[in-house]
Length: 608
Image (cartoon, rainbow, N blue to C red; front, side):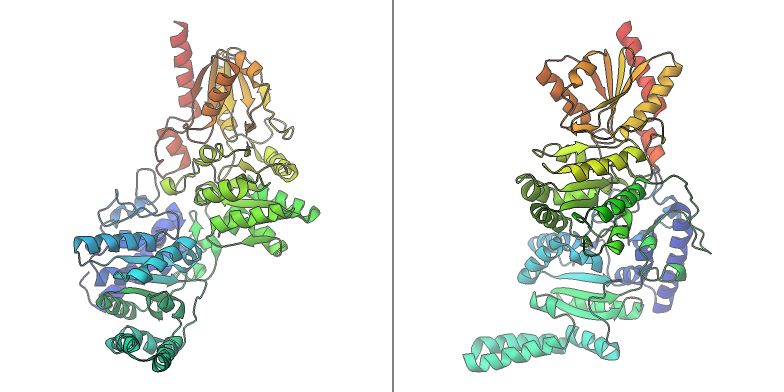
């Protein structure tokens, strides 16, 4: 990107305009990506990303990168089915280095790249762009610990847009930043190290104190003490200043952190500042900022928030935690009301789970409120810190199933598969908002082991009020409708899909039974009588087929000596692409129409 600074500033303005045009129509991540424009343009101005890999943490802030690497026209398809991903995706462009949808991986990836370059004799330098929020996760410090020891050349561009790790101190700060990166300071450090090795203990002590006091005048002492050079804080919207710092860091040939302070939503005044609602948005009006989508249906997340808040007001033993998603999980209202009992621990799912295990040990009733995709990050803690002692931690799993436009990195399809294998874990799922209320009450009452219940993004597939809710009783299923020959088994949101198929088959003259499994673990002990009464059984759930609901039912059938004709209509063994949920389901052949046709064909074939 060989342009002068005036041209580059215009590029930044054009990029912001393009992002707003597209995101206001398609939805997507907004405030963080607007705030990172100058950082990314500066990276491209100083480095060739084909030789120096750009590693974006989470990568929701990388829209500018997409726009300067040949995807300007295609940007209209952002997050659309068959279009551009909302995240970095190497299969989409040779300029995208590494898939990233979960946070705090970039520095570790960068260390791996630096090791490979060292072994291969390559001169390239990995550059990681990471937000301050991602610095709350342990993986970052595991990587920094090794990087500081090994001293591989690497640049970490820290985008500080919210937490204010260190406040800027004006002209003095800028001067010190350049001084620290410059040859005078680096030469002085090298000389002090050499002197320390030659001087007697008393003199060495004086020299050591001098070196430490010199570093103390900078805000980066934490990183310096870890062995990482520090530049900053700098203005993350001063394009010329960022480029200057990147060039200084490049020439140092050591690990360097450049601490850049930016404003979320920069250039779009309505979204500027610490507004969580502008992190990820649906379509909106650019002029007013008002959402273009309205719905009178209460989301499962809203129901969870409302009910748990009511129960927490009645029971002081109820506590809860989320990991940097208070708004997304609905826990924000509880944190506001009871800040001493509900916590946002930032991007630290492992800590969230283990800390709640301790609270359960102390007699509290903890709720861990985390998206399905992010709970994966704490699997060892679920097994080791919760499961082994069978502590009654309640896992409220939001965004279970297909999540739509966020795609592969955010699909909530694995929780059943990885939780079903945890001994003593109780798994259950509501089918609609009414049964979600009952699920919360059951979780509060269950104190014999850990339990987990899941619910989808947006809304349930089953319309409210179709079936009255009778509450949850441990290990009990519910036969919602009897039928002849065909049984449709639904779990959680799968009940709604099964009901849609049932209605279509009824129009074809087929009477189908409909079973809400309710509990996946433990399964209903009386299930054998229901299953044995039907010739054909079809299973529906918003989870992977492998180690999913059908697997559990077939294992049960084998134990009971049942021979069943059972077919799974669960998610196939592949990473599911991004796009509108309805379109994704249609592509997978999981619409009620497609499934009912498959059932009709099978029955016709079997009867011939």
